[in-house]
Length: 488
Ligand code: GLN
Image 1 (cartoon, rainbow, N blue to C red):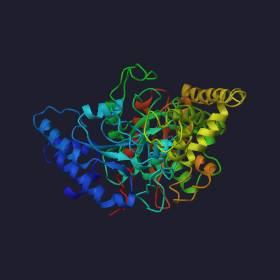
Image 2 (image 1 turned 90 degrees about the vertical axis):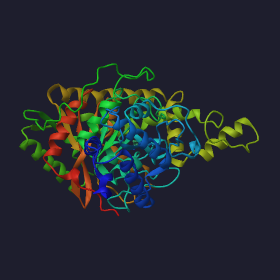
Image 3 (image 1 turned 45 degrees about the horizontal axis):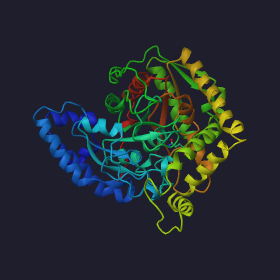
Image 4 (image 1 turned 45 degrees about the vertical axis):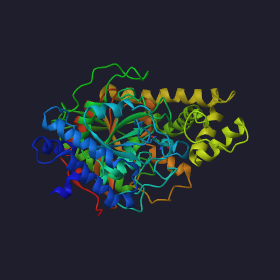
């Protein structure tokens, strides 16, 4: 079944590599062929590094033959969201302002994956500077959902989610500031994990909102997510927010046993706006958890309703500060026709940034300005503490929280593009965990109207092991993760 190699999971492919049934070159070639066959429809990639990938695969085949490549990720073709710096490989953030930017160093996660022996096949499309929920805000083109090409793949990591769903990479790393790993994972029927804030180094991640950003994996199943976490988690002295705590073996909890676990179902996550098909799938998942021996109880997280408003003060504020560095002098695009320096700053940023990025910079600059700082940013930080206290309280007595990842399945391209507030609502159930700094995973949880539904499992800080354990038990008891989009 050489033609279907691209649809394997990492652990299946790794087994075949070890058994010498396939080579890394064959795996890589099958992914590259798949990209050639379907990416003109899906448009997941900003850059494909075909030649380098094949050379790298040969190098890995050599090491594998000598028994010198021991990581389960060795020889596996992967891709990275174009927000992650890759040495010598163009890194654009899907923005015109960084269209020709080639970093001189690797992000820590890129470096760790390289040391594990992965094969980089390309960089994936995203909402410009990770601002969006549909990948329609890319400065280059829109990515399409492999399940239905008229719909969005979610965002901002839509290229990453679509690539894994469509067989164009066994793993993609994305970033999640308000939901950008979990929401696109939900909309494309793959596994997406946002780790605890600080668990994975962000050195080399192009910053959006520094108190919220986290890097995490998109994979085709839970075991793969655990394997990737084993590689990318851990302390990094290059990231001052990195947590210095030992990294467990994340596969250890993948036993299928969750008997006696206590799961919380927050009533604030089942509100108006949740599609009936999504709610039905999550209610069915609750029954499944009970069959598996867990208890599920309704709880209240009363500050949930403030999360979205709080996020849209904090994230734009931090973005406005982070994006001040793009001035046409230090990085990327520069308007060389500007008559003087000041006009050059203006015209570079005017031409380089898209509409949503400008909107965020303006909101953020306003919220941070003298006289408004206390009323907006400081207030938002206080509300953020209340949102976090909701989580602290639930985790005193519960192992995890269960909810829909997104209130809807994938929506039509263009449907929300001109209505930022409707778009912002896509992340209503993912944003609270970013506020609290706690981990969350979205896993395939059924279908509605023929499109994937994401089941979200949220855990306490450094509780990745626990949520992966719960996710795995559910995955083993269901078949959703085995479905592949009908795309040829
Ligand atoms: N959709 C949210 C936003 O537009 C979250 C983005 C993200 O997590 N990067 O800001």
